[in-house]
Amino acid sequence: MFGLDPLSRPVAISEILILLALAALIGWLLGRLILTGRINALRAAIADKENELEECRRTKVSGKVSGIKPTRPEPVLETPPTFVHADPLLPVIAPDDTPELINEDITVPLVNVPIDKPVVVSPPVAPVIPDVPSAPVEAPVIAGNSESAVLNRIAARASEINFDRIGRALASEADDLKDIVGVGPFLERKLHSLGIYTFRQVANFTKEDIDKVNEIIEFFPGRIERDNWVDQSKEFYKKKYGNKS
Figure (cartoon, rainbow, N blue to C red):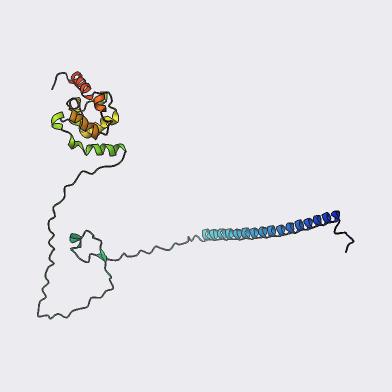
């Protein structure tokens, strides 16, 4: 048509470049149209927001001029429904004491009772609940690794210690058990929670007491014997109290 040879390489390259230029122009035009549409939409949205803002300002100014504050609707208090036990003996014979809802719209039919005959209403008879022997309550086992849980768990087993053999003491009579090698502040609190406060009590430990205390305070097995708590406590007791029994 234009006298060009389609089989010529330069002609083919020229046609390709023209097609690429046309494609780029069309893409630019489409992108321009889309961008223009978005910009127009954003401008319209901004204009709407500005109108709303201006309307709010006018409303606020008119409210200040008139001196009338906008009133809020008063809350409506709903009257809760009447609850009453369907059976006055329900809390006695059943653990569930949840009241039942009584519909106030229910009408009670009237019964024609002769006037000359008195109506005798028998009082309600309470049900006889048999005595059930209560099971012995065991001391709860407190789980956990916190200090309070450990001390409570140890105190719950204080009855397993033979205090008739090692002696009894009060917290006001407590010695500084931390003087014993191997006893730290937390271990001293464990012994206090068990009821062991003095050097005299530790000095009276027998092999049975050592094993039992070692188990209850959750200490390393055999550590009390290796640190020789008994002989240490005897020496501290002599230094503090002399030969006093």
